[in-house]
Image (cartoon, rainbow over all chains, first blue to last red; front, side, top):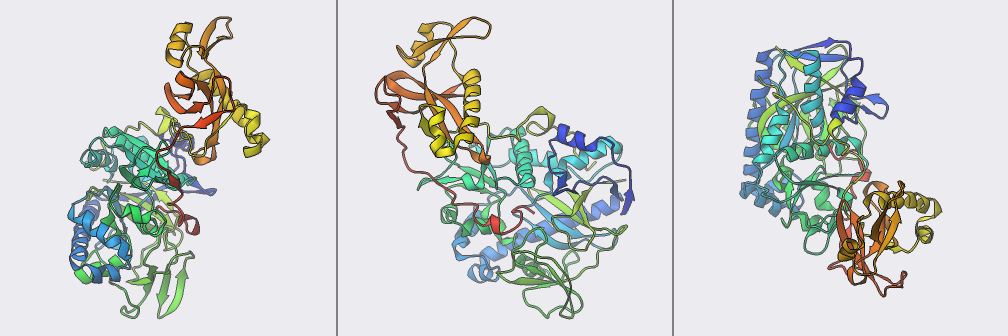
Length: 376
Length: 173
């Protein structure tokens, strides 16, 4: 695994906007898509990432099963509200399919990849990984290979989803270019799989006492939501959603995995597993540097790196009310001053490819840049 | 090989403009009937209404049902409900009677403004993407202001989702 500097394509901005519809390559004036460098992997390294990803997904699914079997006690340790328990257990027992997830891995080419966290419910950076870096590869290194069959697997996954002829609604918050871009890309793949689709803002979803309704008052039977389950269930219409009146993607059982207490339960289930970091629900269990993460958080918010109770690095944010998990700190080596995190995708629970985000600090945040890769 | 063999986009990219404003036939929940665009000023302000007038006129020019024969038009919209108009090139055609406008707010903050025609049995009709939608009734043939909105089966409430997001960063991650 190497990071190499390279001259960007002269017309890349115009090209990705015009030909790919990539609208958020620059976020708040700062570069997000960054092709001034790329990562080069060996085939053996990619195989190691792929195998670790497959293994982690199997462990994650085993954990959901274990939590559903255990019931109340496990849900409480995960800080999942009681109102959601039945929906979680029901969706798991009904074997509701899932579309996608992203494991964030610490890996620098040596030793086993280590799971930092699993974004199982609302992962983004999908379009960049699936399409933009693939397009970059075709232009810059067409004879090289890339760990990225995300696009093809998404279309296949939609074909196997049990939605029948029902229309699938894709929903995100209004006025957020990155999230809207992500659902529009997912909708693109669903259309190519032959599904009927529609878009609706989360804020515009209607409830008439019996069914969720779109702006035409048509019933919303299937809803893909790029909006956290734990937020939905806490909001006014949440009580209606957990009744199962609408089929939701990701399914409710993803709530078990989308909160960081699951990292502690994974470690408890498979202590010492080479792809896991020691993680606990209580402080004081780990010697050396510890990363404190809120049980519910996104975009690297409210993270503290602690060394003997002293805060050595910290990010801000509004999360943390439900408590924290404590994870052993893993040094990510810097590549030319940049700290990469590998986002390793599963589509329909199968390893599908990676997208690399790097930051000038060791905590990956929403300001991180997306850098393409290939392997040979 | 671990990369996709080919990638095609049908919604994003140069093949489409789908990332633009909502393009569907939805009549917004808050849409109201105005006999003239000027009368909407009390609800939306003069500037918004002037902008809406431009959009409504554009819809009138591009979306209004057009017929070569009066009989064809009356078969669709009812006897006495069609008027003749001139094209820029000097020809003429028939279209349903313009009664006013439906106006409201759309997803993404855009203003909805659609011409309303009189249809069969004094119905109020809007045309969108080639489909006709019944949005209400006029009490009598002459009474433009006597508009009654179509009865709604059950009240649809909105805004019950999305309230957590403003306190945090992006929902996706």
